[in-house]
Amino acid sequence: MRAADDDSRPSRGSRGRPPLLSLARLSRYTLQQGSRVALYTLHSEVMRRMNRRLQKDLPDTPEVVPDGPLPGQRRMLADIVRLFAEDLRAVEDGLYPMPTDGTMSPRELIATSRAFFRDVPDVARRRATGAHQEVNGRTEGLADALPRYYRQNFHFQTDGWLSEDSARLYDFQVDVLFSGATAAMRRRALVPFAEILRKKDQRKVAYADLACGTGGLLHPALAAFPRLRGTGLDLSEPYLKVARERTPSRRASYVTAMAEDLPFADNSLDVVSCVFLFHELPPRIRRQVIAEVAQVLKPGGSFLFVDSLQTGDVPAYDGLLSVFPQLFHEPYFTSYLREDLTGLCADNDLQESWMVPAFVSRVAEFRKSGHSVQ
View 1 (cartoon, one colour):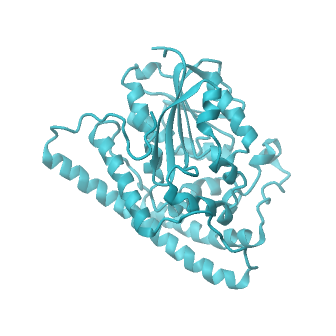
View 2 (cartoon, rainbow, N blue to C red):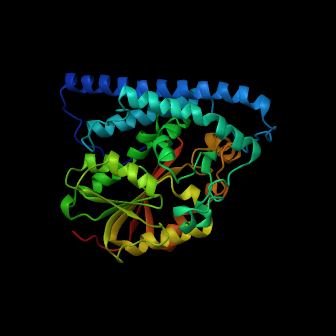
View 3 (spheres, rainbow, N blue to C red):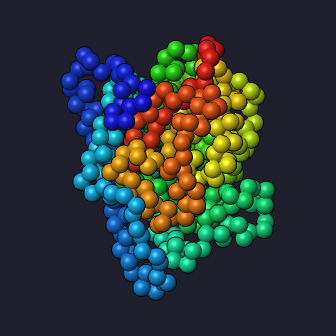
């Protein structure tokens, strides 16, 4: 089933809840998420003004030309509000607990904010000069052993994926880009995950999150499902180090490996997830990753997918999607926009059972044919 406009997965648990309890939860959620939107919108506006000043001393960049309609601010804000409403509905339905986004201490927030603004001029310089191969120029350490497609300054960010400074700043940078809605987009994958686990003993479920980064999905998954164990897989040692710090659970383990060469036995995993991975892979590697996922999933297992919208998912956003790789170093994004993911997965025995848009993301579940192993 393909749901283009709403979340058609059945909800449960919210009917009959005492009104005061729901009102208190609504107030808490609104305050939390509203504060996040305000915080990151403020950073976005300050960054925009900084970039305007910096551009006076930098080479001219090509004019950005959208290939399709652009959503207005009112439409984007409405879609963020809708995303938050769906997120809260899942909490009300008991699918996962109240989120704990934005729990940085004041000291951490100030330090991260300062680091963010210190990096703005360097990002602006790389964008203006086209400098996106600084990471590849390194000759020492880990970078030598990494795939060539990976050794780039994606988003023009400092150090690419290869430093702790980058790892500690990355989530903040993404939230500035998405107005504080990133975590809520990721959590949409917990909706099908919760339905999967209703039929299983969590303690016996084998789960891996590919390209886990600093634990953006692994952490809320383990928080939502208290008996679940999960393995976070990533190519970046610095990002995995930060993930270990942020998710110090005995139920979490980590492995450094490539998604196109998974270190798991065939038919060994019940659930595999990935978030914001596929748009940063060359087409050939995307196909290898899908084949690997199909290989390691058990019959009846699920592949939970979160990534950017694709062209045509929400036509009002098509122009915005085409602009993104013009503003940021995303060498594989344009090919991703028109990739037939449903077809590629079907060719590998993974059938799309659910897909919904979530602001600027698409969230999908693909199931491997066969009966699930309890």
